[in-house]
Image (cartoon, rainbow, N blue to C red; front, top):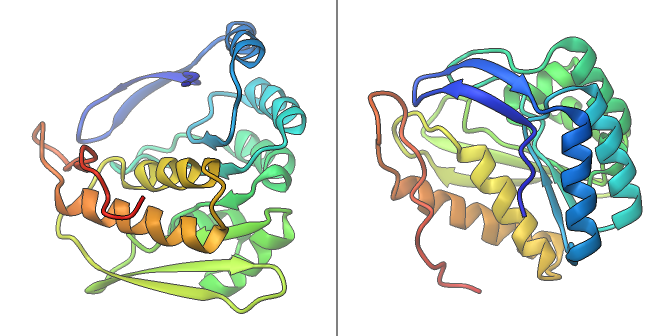
Length: 225
């Protein structure tokens, strides 16, 4: 089930405009679904305003299910999507409720105030998230390095061959796949491995529907599960 947090004007190049969905309508949509359906996991992406943050925090406390939070701060084309006050509200109210926080390297540095990714991961864990996966798709190099940080354990580094070309929706694909695996009751280690593999294969199968960035090719069945 999907709740739309914001309406956008965007194409495969960039986001041109964003308009938050009215919080009263947003809340009514969620309450309707919560009365009707069993929710096994939650994936959060782009948020519209601070009122939505407060509503989401209330729902997460009620649901108590695995929650994957993808803190989208900027569009792939460069447009800032979250102002300072909204980012701060998300960090204060939602990070402590996240089972997995899923920033890319630039977002992790901005949210933590640390340039070193290991320091950034440790700081984001201190913000309350149970796990942090910092993705490296926005970094350079022939490999994509994703760093999994967890409490009382050494960081785990995943290495993936870099797929050439810029993508629109790579992080959203990973976050959604991870939430789906956690909803199945899989362990964090298993869910992370399968979700990353799925995302890598989706990028390999990516295509360019417009004149800008490619989008992941999500329509295939993973070999595992």
